[in-house]
Amino acid sequence: MKLKIDNDLLAEEFFEDTRLLGIVAPIKNYQFVWHVNQKFGFQFEINHSMEIQLVKKNRNYFFSIYDYTVPNRFLSHYLYQNQHDGEFLLPEFRHLDYLWLTKGDEVGSEELNDLSQAIRKLPSVQLVNEMSNEKIKNKQHLIF
Image 1 (tube, rainbow, N blue to C red):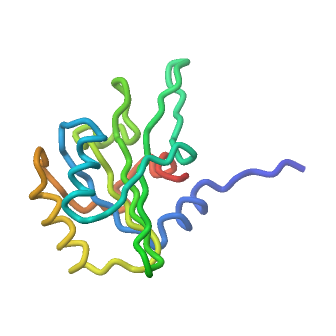
Image 2: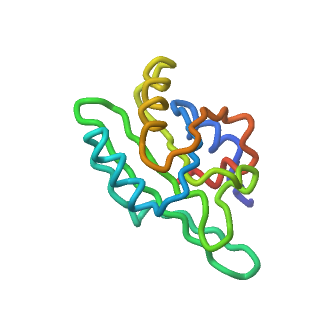
C-alpha cells in the first residue's frame, strides 16, 4: 500500500488561521527586517530551519523566512523573501518582494488594516496589499 500526502488538505489546514500581505519593497531583506523591527518593536529573526528550498532547472533556490512570535498571544508573524537569484517563491506574484503571513490568533480586518498602513510608511515600501489564499496557485511553497 502506498501512502500519498494530500497537499490540498495540508495547504487548507496550514492556511486555516492565517492572513497574508504582499509587499513591494525593493531593498535587501535584512534592511527591510531592520526597519520593521525598529518601527514595530518586533524581534523578527531569520529562521534557517524554516528556509524553503525549491529545485528548478536542476538548481536549488533558498528562500529565507523571518519569524516573530507576539508575547502573551498565540500569534506569529512570518516574513518570506519572494525572490532568490532570479527565481520566485510565488511565480504568479513576481512583482512582490516580500510576503507577510500572520498565523495563530485571529487577526481581524481592522488589525490587519492598521498593520498594512504602518508597513506602507516604512522606507522603500511602495505597495502593501492583502492576498486571498484562493488566488495563490503555489500556496504549498509557503508551507514550512
